[in-house]
Amino acid sequence: MSSRPVFLSAAEVQDHLRSSSLLIPPLETALANFSSGPEGGVVQPVRTVVPVAKHSGFLGVMPAYSAAEDALTTKLVTFYEGHSSTSAVPSHQATVLLFQPNNGSLLAVMDGNVITAKRTAAVSAIATKFLKPPNSEVLCILGAGVQAYSHYEIFTEQFFFKEVRIWNRTKENAEKFVNSVPGEVRVCSSVQEAVTGADVIITVTMATEPILFGEWVKPGAHINAIGASRPDWRELDDELMKQAVLYVDSQEAALKESGDVLLSGAEIFAELGEVVKGVKPAHCEKTTVFKSLGMAVEDMVAAKLVYDSWSSGK
Ligand SMILES: NC(=O)c1ccc[n+]([C@@H]2O[C@H](COP(=O)([O-])OP(=O)(O)OC[C@H]3O[C@@H](n4cnc5c(N)ncnc54)[C@H](OP(=O)(O)O)[C@@H]3O)[C@@H](O)[C@H]2O)c1
Image (cartoon, rainbow, N blue to C red):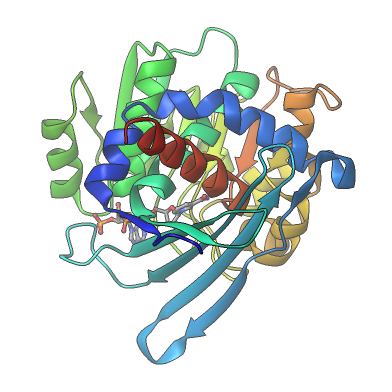
């Protein structure tokens, strides 16, 4: 008889995932396995997204199995437009279910918000490690919501930047960000001011039209484009998409879900997993974009790490 599944709250998940940097080695392995095709042993269909049109929302279902990890999970995530980053209800809410792969029993139901925040930022850190220009000095974050905080945390852990800048649609939320994180961050009044001369740029907004324009971006800069997760949403303009060498997490998903890729007609150069494996080059001397949409296998890696840590402390 199977025992009852454990429920892990956001605070408990946070406790077992204190440093996002812990996620980097297993995520690199999972990205490489994912990009190895059938021999990598990752089964992960492109997510199913159900529009909740009446309320400008979406429900995404994200199952994954990895033979290497022998882990089976599904994330359920809702995301709603029209939120402010200070709304009482977050724009994105997620739950991860972890199953026992040998018999299908449900082992755990865990909060997926912390997992989503941390695994996304950890994957951006991996992309940045490979693709940032040598001697990167200036980091710029566009957006001041949940992902802005998780990206700042791991980027300041993993890299050294002489200067960090932030721009946000609502300036007060950028000021709140600056007052709540350790270290010095400069609030900028426009995207152009924030990105001019920046070596690494992170876009973490719910924008549906381009906010970042190629003409403002320093040649050779690296951009982690995290928002615009729908086929008709944009964060980056055509010029930037076309002038950069384009890396994605999943080619199949990018060609179905990414407005920045589909509407610009930009050509995908490689999956990040191929760079991690060493089968495609990291063109860190050129302007690069990593278009992240988020993958179920990333949630799986994080959920397994949390569950294993919880189990070892029982
Ligand atoms: N790639 C992945 O794996 C992945 C995973 C999770 C989330 N995401 C995406 O990352 C983005 C940020 O997520 P989050 O959880 O940080 O959201 P969040 O906490 O709700 O923050 C949203 C941010 O976007 C800003 N914003 C909202 N509408 C905007 C607009 N029209 N133009 C410019 N800025 C706008 C908000 O500014 P205000 O302060 O003015 O409200 C806030 O800074 C979303 O697009 C989300 O779908 C990607």
